[in-house]
Amino acid sequence: MTPSMEQRTLGDGGPKVSIIGLGTAALGRPLYINETHCEDLAGAADPESLEARAGEVFDAALAGGVTYFDTARSYGLGERFLGHWLGRLGASDRVSVGSKWGYTYVADWDPDATTHEVKNHSHTALRRQLGETRAELCDHLGIYQIHSVTPDSPVLDDGAVIAALGELRATGVRVGLTTSGPDQADVIRRALKVEANGTPLFSTVQATWNLLERSAGPALAEAHDAGLGVIVKEALANGRLAGAGNRADVAHLTGWPPDAVALAAAASQPWADVVLSGAATVEHLQSNLLATKVMLDGDPTLALGGDAPIEPERYWAERSQRPWT
Image 1: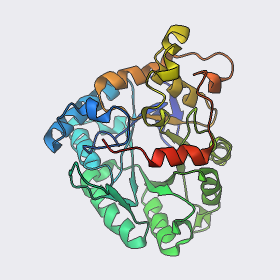
Image 2: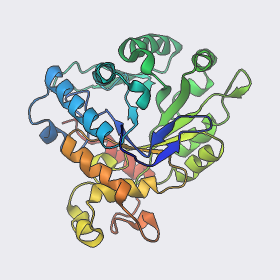
Image 3: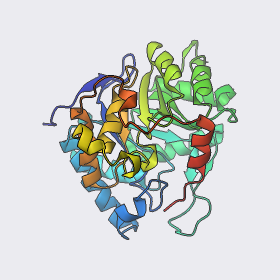
Image 4: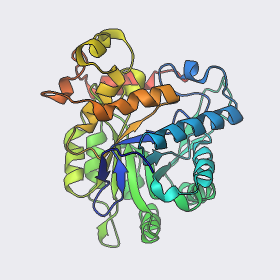
């Protein structure tokens, strides 16, 4: 029996899921932009070692009450690792799984690669990647999301893609999108107007929100009010809110580690249904899960004191410069 964790309904008619979910961006490939990722892997970055590590983190997540798991075609072998683990689990009806299409992992485990993933939101890419996702996750796929929609992507106006996603929805898979960049709010509001067969297409939206980058908050509230499930990604700002720096006194002042406080601040938003942990080790995951115990007084967005929000353009410009390690 999975230990209890607060469960929230992921959108109108959606599944009950744990308030803290687990993302696999840092588990399925040898390089990622999170701080300390290289140290987390401790040199064991071959596929076999990564799958063993991922299985340990998945086991710890389930034991800690996590019931939502997030992956993507571009997360290296993340879908495969998760699919294998679910097959061994033998009771995968205990968890919900979301994946994403639209990016292809092209680094092929090369530590010197200059390009790690390539974006393609075409109808052809959707058909190809949906087949690949089904091959890896079998019947475990519950939500399929367009990966990282930005204003320059024509995908929300592509009739062939919208029709294909409507067909997918008719099979029982919920359809969503994720957003990135300083114009997340605009994309979310556009997505709320997209219909397939006369009804709103999207059931979920996944967006970056953290104590440094809060600009999507009002649009996420609108999406939640419209019945979409809201998934928060990068609540730790790729590790920037988990380390020391001006957060050195957080544990002393609150009694909780900075990562747990930052995740709790995201989870306290009234529109948030799931906040993803991006942990790559069991130790980090267990620290992240302490967020479920953190009680924040007053305005939760003030939780980490000196970490005031910064302009979205600056935040995303800095993020784009982060090295893959």
